[in-house]
Length: 502
Ligand code: ZN
Image 1 (spheres, rainbow, N blue to C red):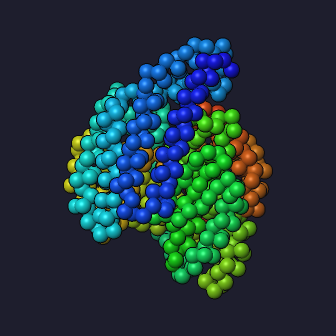
Image 2: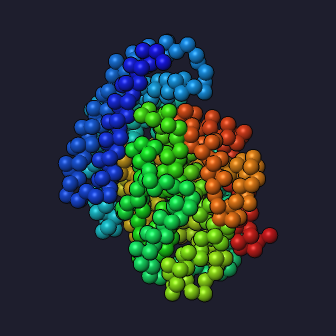
Image 3: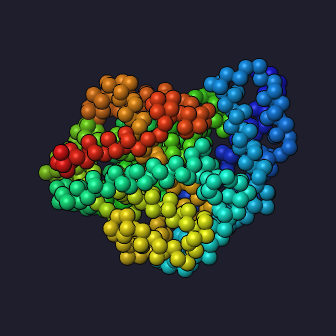
């Protein structure tokens, strides 16, 4: 490696380490910090974020990137060096567009919006959050203008989470999903009584829930020697390095699914980070390539693995020994059906695989309306209720169960929501490709063992980190650009069988 590249790496490592220190403070804020510490913590985070932004957007950084680029004798597009320069150039260009003063305002506005949202949600009082939401929307609009765009204002914001994806592509895919899912959802709704899930709702002591969640997280391949499980209000995963990729979960004492599937979901995120190649460490390539591909890994473990028949045939007996009274008379097959029951409900994170994407389409549409100035903050609750009725046929009785349920709009991170649904589509496409390339994966999955699937994911997704864009990665791994067809095949087969539709 030449000295120009080494000098660039030195700076990249410095910024990377600062980023991880920010993440420790952010992780601690959600897991351990007393609520009273919020004001001071927001100040600390704002200071560090501004320093990080200044370092990245400096003239010196631009010079280091270009000097290193000019000194590279090989431009092999698969080399770490090439991919790093490409990523840094893009990110540098974006960072230069954001003034320091804007970075400070984003951190401050979001820092104040979060506790207001927590209170508004707890008290079902949207008015408390409304002025903060108006400020957040204004910041998102300003950010879109600062980045600039050719077609739609939503494009540059979406691009930060799903590089290379346009709003128009997402809209076309979501419209196809909406049209094709509706008849399946209607057919399932007509046979709603076919699945009984009442036994999931009864007292389940949290200590045993935690023991089982750790057991299944290990069973899918999450490495606890390089991980950590914490308890929070809103679950997430964070990676401080590939050897310290943490997950968090919430536990409901009278409902099994939240802790169990939440843990599997976050394990999928953390396994992606644990699986990045060691030689990408301390660079921005040492993480998942996009929010959508990240979500594909979490949904893979939560649903394709964690809600499969084979998985419960293998692991249900252990669950039953932990909860002998609650699950007496329940079979592995009953349990498999119960955790897949389809039911239009109000809460996104608890939605089944068929209705989940509708929750995302709703947010995608409302978010664009707010960004484009067609929907003002004050009118959000009514617009939310109308869309829920239109898409899922249910109306939230409170805003807590409606537009206040998610944390995302406390930050101007518009463009994030659609990546959840894209994640479901990527997951199905990756799984289909994996099982075609290695049919033994299907046999292993029927035995409840995802190890060979994880090997395929490590090879085709995890190890690359952020070297490739999501579009390149999905093309390399599956031979096709993103399509909703594999997802439709997956849900049609699975729910057709579950509900006896064929
Ligand atoms: Zn997730």
